[in-house]
Length: 311
Image (cartoon, rainbow, N blue to C red; front, side, top):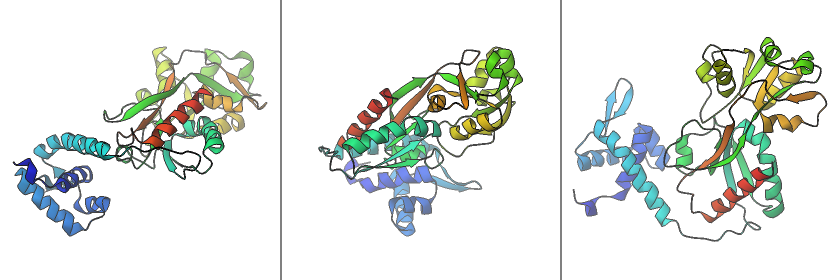
C-alpha cells in the first residue's frame, strides 16, 4: 500500500463508520450524503482488502481487521488535529466563548456556583452550557463537542486528559428533629430508613437493585466490609432530591460532605459524621486531547481549579 495515494478523508470515514456502525448515521456525523458515505465504504474495502463492516442480524458489525485498526486510526486523527491547531491568545475580558460542561448534580451544586461567580467578574461575556451525564457520551468529549466533563469516573479512555478537582469525605444529612440526632451511632444509623444518591460516569442511568451491593457504591461497600447493610427506601440520582427527602420524610442521606455543607446554615438540617469509615471520593475533570493546547481551554481549566480550591 502506497501511503502517498491514500485519501485522508477515507481515514476519517473509517473512524466514524467504526464508531457509528451505520452508514446513514456516519454520513450525518460528517454532514455528507448517504450515497457519498456508501461510496467511501466501498473505497475503504478496496484499500484494505477487507469488508470493514458486515451485515448481521444485530446490524452492521466491524470485522476483526477493522476492530484492530480502530484505535490506531483514532490516535492518528487525534494527533493530526492537535498538530494542525494554531496557537492563539485568549482575551477573557472580551471573549464570547461558550464552554460546554457535562457536570454531575453533585459537581453542579458544589463547584459551579463559585466558578460562575469568578467568570462573571473576569469574563462577563463568556457563557456556560451545563449538560447532565445523560446528555453526552465519551465520544462527545473525545471529539471536542463537550469542553469538559466533571464527575466521578470509575473508568476512563486512555486518550483523555484528566485532573483531580478535589477529594471529598462523606457526611450524613438528617432533619434537625430526627430523634437519632441525639444518639447517632452505627446501631441507630442501621435502624433508620435511607435515601441512596449517586451518579457517576456517562449515559442514562439504570434501575438499582438493593441486593447488588457491588453496584451501590462507596457507602454500601463500606458497610458490607463490616457485614452490615442499610435499609434503602429511595434511590435517586439527584442530590437536592436526597436532601429534601432527608428533611421531609425523615430519611438519612449519606452524601459527599461538600454537598451536605450547602445546607450548613439551615436550622432544619443536622450534619453528622458517619458512624463508620467511608473512603473519600475523587471528583475529576476530563477533556479531549484536541482541546489540550487551546488557549481558551487552558484558561478555563485553570479557572476551574481556582474555583475548586475556594469551595
